[in-house]
Length: 320
Image (tube, rainbow, N blue to C red; front, top):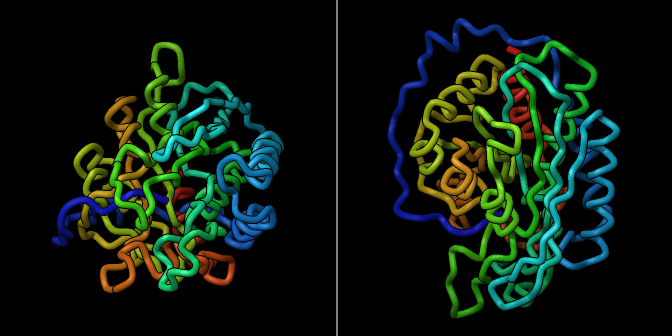
């Protein structure tokens, strides 16, 4: 993941329309954290999936085959994108579409590339090493794959779901340079959003971005731009978390804005999109958690309980 926290941290009590969440009953379909963890591990077996690498190419092929296995029609949106340093990035957005349906259609997305530099590592000797990205990338893809698997097995969903694995998200300007460019992040999402047209593509009621959804002791606060562009979707998802029994993972508190893949969806594609992203208000190393952009973003720091909380919340949303 991602760019930078923008602005000061804003924490405030909020309302989540408890009467509505109390009326929701927990759905019977169960998200499998074990399955999601296995999907996360499968990606990490390729090594860091940095842009233009063989690991990146091979893992992309694996992701495509998994979505096809679960009944999705897959499109590949390839583009040569320019990184902050002029590097040409061979980018592939993986778009997995569910079958045509008259049901409302939503979009769930995450990025699948790895950060090429552990530039937030406490040891400067690691700053030029790639990140395994078990949480910052693989966890979001893993949750989406498990949802796709469950959607294939159960036809009682109240909405159709498409998935996008955005590429070239994490080639943003490293901390060890003197440059600063907010537009150097989320390149794949920027490209997709600039080419999206509801006249020629599926229109989406809304979108949900998953970013770092498997970290230990993670919680998901209401991110500023999500509240700005899609407050009603934030409330809907937070209500689903409460109904599913995972409200403690989704505090009704606001936090600052994050430069992430949801921004071009909101600002360029016109799709109201929220960001489910971990936030650690008391972590000195980073508000994104102690493993963010470090060599410790590995499977040992993935928590199945966090995967379960996020995954079951989305299952509650889709099937309730």
